[in-house]
Length: 434
Image (cartoon, rainbow, N blue to C red; front, side, top):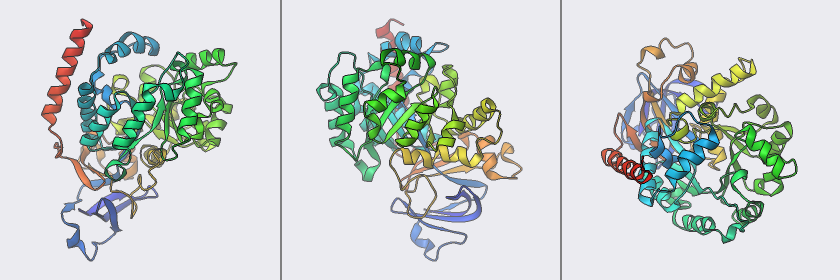
């Protein structure tokens, strides 16, 4: 495809007008202010009038199959939400439920310009098949939990992860990658954490995903259990961060915690909307930035968000941190977009993604600018972050393949997905007696 005469955000997060972006073999092969000499070799020409081309979004903390629980549990504290509603529902999930819910989540992500997810859930084979067929990139994992003192290699999650690795790791030229993960400190035993850390070190091509310091009560209870150590300090003492890690939430952090994250190159996956909805708090972005910690954006699941609209997430990220810090300069539009794109790509170990740059993978999203709330244009990047809507996405491309365009998903039977998810919902609620 050749995007013709289109505005785009370049690798320095500057707006360029009247650009030409050529895609071949899944990668960005040409960027210029005039059509390439061999324009005919790119095939389809996409007219760029009143359009903006951006790199696709990276959602670095998700539980995609929880699309099935959208709106199911509301107005509850986190622990009640988990133990009274979410966990009982999840206990009744079958592999086919996870598959179709993953497909629904993929369709939603593509609709909103999300090209990749860092995902933690259960029933890994069904997840992998859902991401394979759903068309997005994914770093996905089984969130291990354990209270009985088993070593990680003795747990079913270990064997399941190895099978996932065999079936999906590197699939489709690296579109799918398998990670290690544990749910959280408060759902695990120290022996599991230490042996998971040791296991992960044996696989340098895999990464780690974990929930960390989401609530104040989580941090307090961890200190009581582990001799005053915070979740960050405890996980570090167990060796978990020796594997490249994405730590979700990180709302309640001390300066010492932040120093540990920075020293170990841990990415903080901040989830502003979910943390606000569950009243968990707001991550300390100013201190994270000062320490040089990589901060990327995640939505968390739609059961605590309730959508995968990364434009909404990006705007919330920019606004909430200005508000709580009292510093209106804390998050620039370029920094917000970086958190939603290249920072997330780096957290997934995808160095050839996240920016519109020659040679990078063609994960491209087109926004329709022909909207009253996108006029006038003093600065198009400002409009993207503060005025645009996720529904303005009219095309999403992953690795050079058009996966969504103008209300159509060429590779998906969207009506079948809707029907299958509704069937799962009805069956599970009947089993719960709801």
